[in-house]
Length: 79
Image (cartoon, rainbow, N blue to C red; front, side):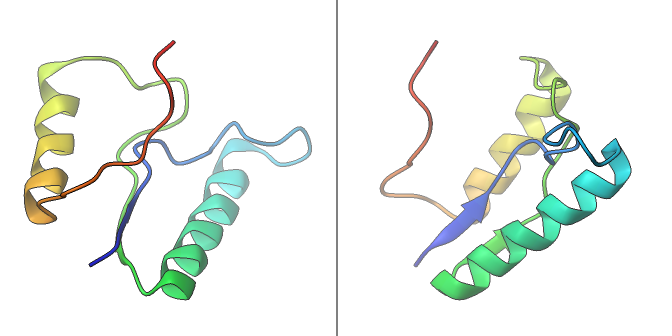
């Protein structure tokens, strides 16, 4: 099974759209990508630039991961 999960919503991913409009655009793009792959889609949890290692966000991420017990996780390289 494929699962698609972005922690951040992409709100600050544009030089021409405001945060609300950009987040809506990125949400549509992500949902479309998940649909094209036949993947289960999980809603982003926070705005861009708000991904911090906090108990609250960690609990939300763990909840998503537990729903889709992954065998493989594809993510970015550590910084």
